Image 1 (cartoon, rainbow, N blue to C red):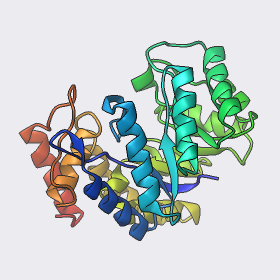
Image 2 (image 1 turned 90 degrees about the vertical axis):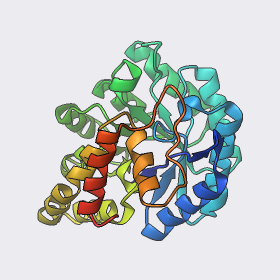
Image 3 (image 1 turned 90 degrees about the horizontal axis):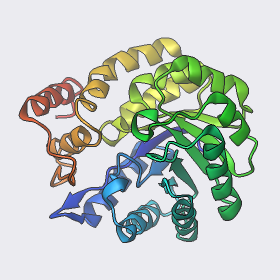
Amino acid sequence: MFEGLSTALITPFRDDAIDETALRELVERQVAAGVKQLVPCGSTGESATLSHFEHGKVIEIAVSAARGRIQVLAGTGSNNTREAIELTKHAKTVGADGALLISPYYNKPTQQGIFEHYRAVAEKTRFPLVTYNIPGRTGSNISPSTLARLADVPHIVGVKEACGDIGQIAEVVARCDPEFAVLSGDDALNLPIMAIGGKGAISTASNVAPEAVGELMRACEENDFARARELHYRLLPLFDALFLETNPIPVKCALELMGLISSAEVRLPLTPITEANRERLQVALKELGLL
């Protein structure tokens, strides 16, 4: 249901408020580039520092700006199952096409707890859900056996995999039904994950270079892996530069340098990019012809 290239949208701020005009312009750019899905309010969208009102507002703006031309997979995850259900219900009500839910963080639930969390959200919302496995942020890993169980739960349609372990991701692909979409959550691993049976990627880099990342994904979908490798190595310096500091610090800086947002503002506890990393990011952007 959710395949191909998705962009994990940033949330632009100006004077500590959501910059709605900039957000709508970013959506238009993604639509024009042919991206398949938008993912507002994920980690890249700084959902952790959005108020509940702001969280709902960002999703509403994304849906409104998309106007049905592109799917919206709204970030609605929480380490509180009740809150995740309410956020997901809101996304459904305002017209999103599905929801992306990070695995419960900080609580460090057991595998059974992770399973019950997602099953509860699916049963209470009856809305297409994509699970999100990123142990580096959550403190827990969704095992392949748990994902295989979740793949059999109605309304759970895929996983964004950012565990960083290709062997584990391959096991997920092998264990789950082919209709269950395994999506890359790490730009540097988009190519290998597609090569082992992934269905797409939820990308940070496509905020900056949606056409180029989209071309890479299409080459993979067409099994043209010689072309995909060429594109991957061309994009690799950008992938590396966008993670010199905690996401989304560098990607916001890149968009500001490109003149696509007026401010690279992030909210504490995130801080502006260092000057040294800003210079490294500029070099990567220039090499791709983006500056």
